[in-house]
Image 1 (cartoon, one colour):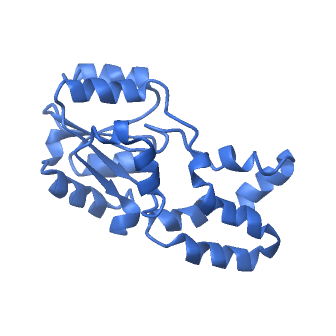
Image 2 (cartoon, rainbow, N blue to C red):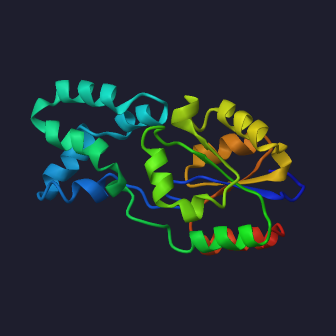
Image 3 (tube, rainbow, N blue to C red):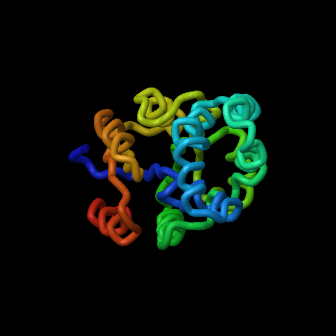
Length: 205
């Protein structure tokens, strides 16, 4: 963490700006709770999904998964067709903070672990919010994922920021630690109220 106060904010997207959980989709498709838990644990796992964030196309990952679980073909294909339903809406209070920072002239950016296929329609759906950001680094496009230091280096270069000029907010401790190791003022997200207090503390709100 830098001793100097930052002048720009870099946001994570999932579970910071927007709620995200595959359960939001699949609880609509699997009525039995035990079957739902088993499907999320054993089929569409976090490790499987991470491949999309790293740049692998859904057509490839789904074909491989269907070959392993052919009886779940329709459910696996729903991931691609209905991915939007894994994101039910905004994290409480966070969009208001984005709007306040933007109104105050604070430069805003994002670094998100997100599929390069799934992000464009999602961004379009929430264009009113995302248009407030000057640039967004999407891991699936860059084939780099947090917490790899390379994605932070790429982002800082693209955003035209030095590490000490940036405040980075993420819900994943490993991602926060990796950013802090580069000299970025890195904050672990818990809730909007706590984040607002930190922004006030460093003079950004």
